Amino acid sequence: MCGRVGLTIRDARTREIRRTYEIRNKITFLAADLLVELIAQRTTDPVPARNLVHSMRMGSSNTAAQRSDTNLGAFVIGKALGDVGKVTGAPGEIQFVTTLDSGDANGSTMREAGLFTAGAALSTSDTPGTTPGSTRMIARQVHPDILKTIAIVIDYSWTIAFTAIP
Image (cartoon, rainbow, N blue to C red; front, side, top):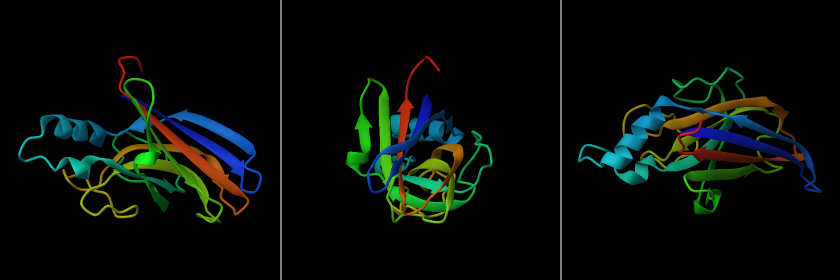
């Protein structure tokens, strides 16, 4: 399993692209646990809806991502990922997309992002845990500083691929 995070910074008024980034991300150890639960579906495993990827959260910490991470370093904002934000393309890949619009997180320096499961609360800001059925972070990555202002929008595109080739 591997992942890539793409960021596109656009002018809020004209939608003209100002800058783009693409970075390989860290898939956390919790992602493997989640997959085992989804595949096994033992009576002791959480109901599948708790394990779906529900939100992308962004923060301001620039601490390097580790596979052992269980949360963002400094949460700023979260966005729910509905079905329209979950795009399947190439076989074995899924892409999660969301946008920080001109009114979102202004004045914050965005430096990190993570993918989170639903857990029981369906929240975009609850404190994640590590136990089955709780909200869990399955991937995290830091990126270059982006000072979020009303003048820009940031498109996040996160691809997770199940492949034998890293």
